[in-house]
Amino acid sequence: MDKIIIHGGKPLKGEVTLSGAKNAVLPIMAASLLVGGTTHISRVPDLRDTRTMIKLLELVGAKTHLKGNDLWIDSEHVDTPVAPYDLVKTMRASFYVLGPLLARFGETKVSLPGGCAWGPRPVDYHLRGLELLGAKVTLEKGYIHAKAKRLKGNHIRFDFPSVGATGNILMAAVTAHGTTVIENAACEPEIVQLCQFLNLMGGKITGIGTHKISVEGVKELSPSDVSVIPDRIEAGTFLIAGAALGEVTVLGGEPGHLKVLLEKLEQTGAKIKISGKKISVRKSDVILPVDVTTAVFPGYPTDLQAQWIALMTIAKGDSVVTDTVYHDRFSHVPELNRLGAEIQVSDNVACIKGRKHLVGAPVMSTDIRASASLIVGGLMAQGKTEISRVYHIDRGYEKIEEKFNSLGADITRLN
Ligand code: EPU
Image (tube, rainbow, N blue to C red):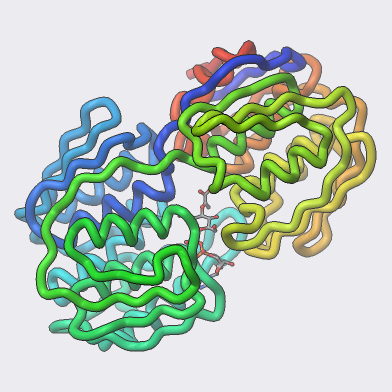
């Protein structure tokens, strides 16, 4: 089993080019199933999750070709609208094929995702939304079986602006009969890009980037080309590491996607410089403690909560990090505590007592962002940190050791 070995305490300095966003490319790949013909996606990050989605697209009958960071998906002969448990259990985002397969074929079977490392993560909004569009949705032997000759537009209001449910309903509604209005929709940049991509295919979506999205159903779509937006979570991970360990510049970023993180970094005393798509951070001599509460976009992202906690472990003072999006996403905390951090969790709140330094130790990664926080922790810690179960990191970060090492880190991988 792969392990990552970090010899920590080395200063970081330099530039890193960002990859395309995992959470933007996955729904776009699913959307390519809406219509026959070839979709070309550029800036596709080479990740375990994008490879899992490629596998799923091929299982339903699409032909794919991946060359570097370019992916071609030919959906002409898709003929098996079924997403099996074996794939869905390894990647919940597989559930994104539900909307497009139902819209195109009038019937689909997609395995119901199980729980995940940090709680139940239900899909009730997705299913209720599809029912409101006229689908008959049943659970059969662990699979969601959804049926509808042609979906019909309707008013849908989510209790919480779910990213995944918004994406699924958008893809289902784009060819529905009539207009669908999604209230309390997600407005994350990844959803904005999905809307724009669907419009490039011929969709009629308005209200993009707001919490009220309207979709006027169209009869036909045609395949389109798209370049994936930069990964704001990857950007944030490198910037947080820079604020702990030196001076880091991320290239090809969207500062507008990172506003709250950049404000929080400044509050730690770090210096931020933005020049077009170049964002730099320089650490301050004393890292001040800063509280963070996660929220939907444009708030502080839950996907950067674990990395922030890692930074706060060496702040001069105490801080509080609250996750309001997920209430139990703290599996990194006991592992960071193995490095000498002093963090206590109660419900969805982590209280962190800043320490002078961390000390390397063997730790285990439990999910994508927890792994990223352990890498940041290991880079900050004195001595050797050994992270096991690193396949989690490969799900969401492209060439992470290579990128950190180019900044002066000492990370190696043992196979
Ligand atoms: N929720 C429900 N019912 C639903 C759907 C969501 O109760 O039917 C709840 C969830 O339990 C959660 C909240 O709504 O408390 C938000 O969940 P959301 O649906 O927005 O999350 P998601 O679509 O499953 C995506 C990202 C996650 C990211 C969240 C929040 C992808 C593939 N995944 O998940 O990314 O944390 O949005 O921003 O886009 C990651 O990249 O590491 C990751 C987990």
